[in-house]
Image (cartoon, rainbow, N blue to C red):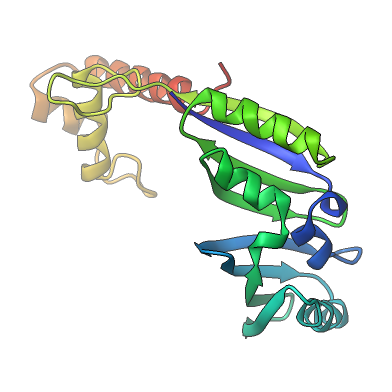
Length: 219
């Protein structure tokens, strides 16, 4: 069963956090993480005062494990950067790979970086937690949730929904029910399915509720 974890990690406890040390008032968002052997390409954006961002780029470029750093775009309060980095030096990233995890999202402040990591099985999270403890990586769980694999007879993933709820939600999205402004009503959908307006409303509510329970809520 797939498990997803949100964790807060102290930036000084892993190499990349020390390389990308942030000054007060700065934040960082990892846009893309492309592993390739021992070298990895990172695309990320930083926000903060221009002087702080300039000093940040100079400091990061001078680190021995950073092969290259490129400023892709700069705005008033944000800079988009790409670095080529020797990931073999970082125990945290090696641990994610060793425990068959996938980094989905990373955001950071001077005090804490928040990682969202997906593991193929629940045991991968346990092994990763032990890995961090053994290497004094300050790892604090913020949220854990699982993706339960309910499927229809054809093999389609249902996430707790019935076939009817799934079909109704798909049609609702296609017809623009969730668009802003809304492009169709429950009455329109009811006419398509040949049921009452109330039935469509209940299908949508129950379908959305089941989807959220089976994807985002902690178990």
